[in-house]
Image (cartoon, helix red, strand yellow):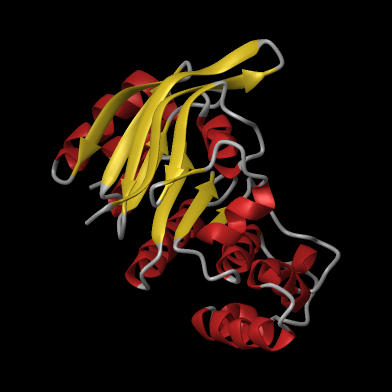
Amino acid sequence: MSSMLRLENVEAGYGSAAVLHGVNIEVEQGEIAVILGANGVGKTTTLRAITGLIRPWRGTVEFEGRRLGRMRPEEVVRLGIGVVPESPGVFRDMSVKDNLRVGGFALGPDRAAVESRLREVLDFFPLLAERQSQLAGSLSGGEQRTLAVARALMGSPRLLLVDEASMGLSPTMVAMVFHLMDRIRNQGVTVCMVEQNVSALDVADRAYVMEKGRVVHEARGRELGQMRSEVASAYLGPAAAKTARGGR
Protein backbone atom coordinates (compact mmCIF):
# COMPACT_ATOMS: atom_id res chain seq x y z
CA MET A 1 0.00 0.00 0.00
CA SER A 2 1.05 3.59 -0.63
CA SER A 3 0.33 6.75 1.31
CA MET A 4 -2.78 8.55 0.07
CA LEU A 5 -3.30 11.22 2.74
CA ARG A 6 -0.63 12.73 4.97
CA LEU A 7 -0.79 15.46 7.59
CA GLU A 8 2.55 16.56 9.00
CA ASN A 9 2.84 18.91 12.01
CA VAL A 10 -0.47 20.60 11.18
CA GLU A 11 -1.45 23.56 13.34
CA ALA A 12 -4.78 25.28 12.75
CA GLY A 13 -7.62 27.10 14.48
CA TYR A 14 -10.17 29.86 14.26
CA GLY A 15 -9.26 33.52 14.64
CA SER A 16 -6.54 33.58 17.27
CA ALA A 17 -7.74 30.37 18.98
CA ALA A 18 -5.49 27.40 18.22
CA VAL A 19 -7.24 24.02 17.94
CA LEU A 20 -4.70 21.70 16.29
CA HIS A 21 -1.21 21.48 17.74
CA GLY A 22 1.17 19.61 15.45
CA VAL A 23 -1.14 16.86 14.17
CA ASN A 24 0.50 13.98 12.27
CA ILE A 25 -1.78 11.53 10.46
CA GLU A 26 -1.22 9.16 7.56
CA VAL A 27 -3.82 7.15 5.64
CA GLU A 28 -2.68 4.50 3.21
CA GLN A 29 -4.46 3.60 0.02
CA GLY A 30 -7.12 0.91 0.45
CA GLU A 31 -7.57 1.13 4.21
CA ILE A 32 -10.10 2.45 6.70
CA ALA A 33 -8.55 4.91 9.15
CA VAL A 34 -10.44 6.14 12.20
CA ILE A 35 -9.71 9.31 14.18
CA LEU A 36 -11.21 8.80 17.64
CA GLY A 37 -11.80 11.35 20.34
CA ALA A 38 -14.35 13.03 22.54
CA ASN A 39 -16.33 16.05 21.39
CA GLY A 40 -14.25 19.21 20.99
CA VAL A 41 -10.78 17.65 20.67
CA GLY A 42 -10.18 18.82 17.08
CA LYS A 43 -11.44 15.94 14.94
CA THR A 44 -13.76 18.01 12.75
CA THR A 45 -11.17 20.79 12.55
CA THR A 46 -8.74 18.20 11.18
CA LEU A 47 -11.18 17.35 8.40
CA ARG A 48 -11.71 21.04 7.67
CA ALA A 49 -7.96 21.54 7.36
CA ILE A 50 -7.84 18.70 4.83
CA THR A 51 -10.76 19.92 2.73
CA GLY A 52 -9.82 23.60 2.59
CA LEU A 53 -12.63 24.91 4.78
CA ILE A 54 -9.85 26.33 6.95
CA ARG A 55 -6.18 26.85 6.08
CA PRO A 56 -3.52 25.34 8.29
CA TRP A 57 -1.33 27.88 10.04
CA ARG A 58 1.68 25.58 9.83
CA GLY A 59 2.51 22.13 8.56
CA THR A 60 1.48 20.33 5.39
CA VAL A 61 -1.55 18.44 4.13
CA GLU A 62 -0.92 16.18 1.12
CA PHE A 63 -3.23 14.03 -0.97
CA GLU A 64 -1.46 11.55 -3.25
CA GLY A 65 1.69 13.65 -2.88
CA ARG A 66 -0.01 16.94 -3.78
CA ARG A 67 -0.21 19.74 -1.24
CA LEU A 68 -3.73 20.95 -0.46
CA GLY A 69 -2.96 23.88 1.84
CA ARG A 70 -4.10 26.70 -0.47
CA MET A 71 -6.81 24.91 -2.44
CA ARG A 72 -10.49 25.84 -2.24
CA PRO A 73 -12.93 23.14 -1.05
CA GLU A 74 -14.38 22.58 -4.52
CA GLU A 75 -10.87 22.06 -5.91
CA VAL A 76 -10.13 19.50 -3.20
CA VAL A 77 -13.32 17.58 -4.04
CA ARG A 78 -12.48 17.55 -7.74
CA LEU A 79 -9.07 16.05 -6.93
CA GLY A 80 -10.85 12.92 -5.72
CA ILE A 81 -11.85 13.54 -2.09
CA GLY A 82 -15.46 12.96 -1.07
CA VAL A 83 -16.80 14.51 2.13
CA VAL A 84 -19.67 13.33 4.35
CA PRO A 85 -20.50 16.19 6.76
CA GLU A 86 -21.93 15.88 10.26
CA SER A 87 -25.49 14.65 10.70
CA PRO A 88 -27.82 14.89 8.97
CA GLY A 89 -25.71 16.11 6.04
CA VAL A 90 -28.57 16.10 3.50
CA PHE A 91 -30.86 18.67 1.89
CA ARG A 92 -34.07 17.73 3.66
CA ASP A 93 -36.44 19.54 1.29
CA MET A 94 -34.99 17.91 -1.82
CA SER A 95 -35.69 14.40 -3.10
CA VAL A 96 -33.23 11.57 -2.61
CA LYS A 97 -32.42 11.62 -6.32
CA ASP A 98 -31.82 15.39 -6.39
CA ASN A 99 -29.58 15.13 -3.33
CA LEU A 100 -27.50 12.63 -5.25
CA ARG A 101 -27.38 14.79 -8.36
CA VAL A 102 -25.97 17.64 -6.26
CA GLY A 103 -23.09 15.34 -5.36
CA GLY A 104 -22.33 14.88 -9.04
CA PHE A 105 -20.96 18.41 -9.43
CA ALA A 106 -17.43 17.03 -9.07
CA LEU A 107 -17.91 15.23 -12.38
CA GLY A 108 -18.23 18.53 -14.23
CA PRO A 109 -20.96 19.74 -16.63
CA ASP A 110 -21.42 16.42 -18.44
CA ARG A 111 -25.01 15.51 -17.51
CA ALA A 112 -24.73 12.09 -19.12
CA ALA A 113 -21.78 11.30 -16.84
CA VAL A 114 -23.78 12.41 -13.79
CA GLU A 115 -26.79 10.29 -14.75
CA SER A 116 -24.56 7.29 -15.42
CA ARG A 117 -22.93 7.66 -12.01
CA LEU A 118 -26.38 8.11 -10.45
CA ARG A 119 -27.43 4.71 -11.76
CA GLU A 120 -24.27 3.12 -10.38
CA VAL A 121 -24.79 4.66 -6.94
CA LEU A 122 -28.45 3.63 -6.80
CA ASP A 123 -27.44 0.09 -7.75
CA PHE A 124 -25.04 0.09 -4.79
CA PHE A 125 -27.75 1.47 -2.46
CA PRO A 126 -30.98 -0.40 -3.32
CA LEU A 127 -32.85 1.16 -0.39
CA LEU A 128 -32.20 4.62 -1.81
CA ALA A 129 -33.22 3.41 -5.25
CA GLU A 130 -36.58 2.39 -3.79
CA ARG A 131 -37.01 5.82 -2.18
CA GLN A 132 -35.40 8.05 -4.78
CA SER A 133 -38.53 10.20 -5.20
CA GLN A 134 -39.05 10.76 -1.47
CA LEU A 135 -37.95 13.93 0.28
CA ALA A 136 -34.70 13.37 2.15
CA GLY A 137 -36.26 14.77 5.30
CA SER A 138 -38.78 11.90 5.35
CA LEU A 139 -36.03 9.29 5.74
CA SER A 140 -34.97 7.86 9.09
CA GLY A 141 -31.74 9.04 10.69
CA GLY A 142 -29.79 6.02 9.47
CA GLU A 143 -31.20 6.39 5.97
CA GLN A 144 -30.23 10.06 5.88
CA ARG A 145 -26.66 9.16 6.85
CA THR A 146 -26.65 6.56 4.09
CA LEU A 147 -27.86 9.22 1.63
CA ALA A 148 -25.11 11.60 2.75
CA VAL A 149 -22.54 8.89 2.09
CA ALA A 150 -24.08 8.05 -1.28
CA ARG A 151 -24.04 11.72 -2.30
CA ALA A 152 -20.32 11.95 -1.48
CA LEU A 153 -19.72 8.88 -3.64
CA MET A 154 -21.40 10.54 -6.63
CA GLY A 155 -18.13 12.29 -7.44
CA SER A 156 -16.30 8.93 -7.73
CA PRO A 157 -13.80 9.83 -4.99
CA ARG A 158 -10.68 7.83 -4.23
CA LEU A 159 -10.74 9.03 -0.61
CA LEU A 160 -13.89 9.42 1.50
CA LEU A 161 -13.81 11.64 4.61
CA VAL A 162 -16.67 10.94 7.03
CA ASP A 163 -17.54 13.20 9.97
CA GLU A 164 -19.27 11.40 12.87
CA ALA A 165 -21.15 8.81 10.80
CA SER A 166 -22.71 7.21 13.89
CA MET A 167 -23.88 10.36 15.68
CA GLY A 168 -27.42 10.10 17.01
CA LEU A 169 -28.04 6.62 15.63
CA SER A 170 -29.29 3.49 17.40
CA PRO A 171 -26.77 0.67 17.94
CA THR A 172 -28.33 -1.27 15.07
CA MET A 173 -27.98 1.70 12.71
CA VAL A 174 -24.43 2.33 13.92
CA ALA A 175 -23.47 -1.24 13.00
CA MET A 176 -25.12 -0.79 9.60
CA VAL A 177 -23.21 2.42 8.88
CA PHE A 178 -19.86 0.92 9.85
CA HIS A 179 -20.59 -2.14 7.70
CA LEU A 180 -21.30 0.29 4.86
CA MET A 181 -17.84 1.82 5.32
CA ASP A 182 -16.35 -1.65 4.95
CA ARG A 183 -18.35 -2.26 1.75
CA ILE A 184 -17.15 1.05 0.33
CA ARG A 185 -13.52 0.20 1.12
CA ASN A 186 -14.00 -3.13 -0.65
CA GLN A 187 -15.09 -1.14 -3.73
CA GLY A 188 -11.62 0.47 -3.81
CA VAL A 189 -12.35 3.70 -1.94
CA THR A 190 -10.04 4.64 0.94
CA VAL A 191 -11.98 5.81 4.01
CA CYS A 192 -11.04 8.18 6.84
CA MET A 193 -13.65 8.58 9.60
CA VAL A 194 -13.71 10.80 12.65
CA GLU A 195 -15.68 9.19 15.46
CA GLN A 196 -16.57 9.20 19.14
CA ASN A 197 -17.90 5.64 18.93
CA VAL A 198 -15.25 3.05 19.76
CA SER A 199 -17.16 0.47 17.69
CA ALA A 200 -15.60 2.10 14.62
CA LEU A 201 -12.52 0.05 15.47
CA ASP A 202 -14.41 -3.04 14.29
CA VAL A 203 -13.78 -2.02 10.67
CA ALA A 204 -10.58 -0.01 11.08
CA ASP A 205 -7.14 -0.86 9.73
CA ARG A 206 -5.56 2.08 11.54
CA ALA A 207 -6.69 4.36 14.35
CA TYR A 208 -5.58 7.66 15.82
CA VAL A 209 -6.78 8.99 19.17
CA MET A 210 -6.96 12.75 19.63
CA GLU A 211 -7.02 14.79 22.82
CA LYS A 212 -6.81 18.58 23.10
CA GLY A 213 -5.82 19.02 19.46
CA ARG A 214 -3.05 16.43 19.48
CA VAL A 215 -2.71 12.81 18.41
CA VAL A 216 -1.95 10.94 21.63
CA HIS A 217 -2.18 7.34 20.45
CA GLU A 218 -1.89 5.38 17.21
CA ALA A 219 -2.59 1.72 16.56
CA ARG A 220 -2.76 -0.63 13.59
CA GLY A 221 -3.86 -4.18 12.85
CA ARG A 222 -4.02 -6.49 15.86
CA GLU A 223 -3.38 -3.62 18.27
CA LEU A 224 -6.82 -2.18 17.49
CA GLY A 225 -8.79 -4.80 19.38
CA GLN A 226 -6.49 -4.51 22.39
CA MET A 227 -6.93 -0.75 22.65
CA ARG A 228 -10.75 -0.63 22.84
CA SER A 229 -11.34 -0.53 26.59
CA GLU A 230 -8.19 1.43 27.41
CA VAL A 231 -8.89 4.17 24.88
CA ALA A 232 -12.59 4.38 25.63
CA SER A 233 -12.00 4.71 29.38
CA ALA A 234 -9.17 7.22 29.06
CA TYR A 235 -10.44 9.46 26.28
CA LEU A 236 -14.10 8.85 25.38
CA GLY A 237 -15.98 8.73 28.68
CA PRO A 238 -18.04 6.17 30.67
CA ALA A 239 -20.65 5.48 27.98
CA ALA A 240 -17.97 4.68 25.41
CA ALA A 241 -16.15 2.48 27.91
CA LYS A 242 -19.36 0.47 28.45
CA THR A 243 -19.72 0.05 24.67
CA ALA A 244 -16.12 -1.08 24.43
CA ARG A 245 -16.59 -3.76 27.08
CA GLY A 246 -19.54 -5.09 25.13
CA GLY A 247 -17.58 -5.17 21.85
CA ARG A 248 -15.40 -7.81 20.37
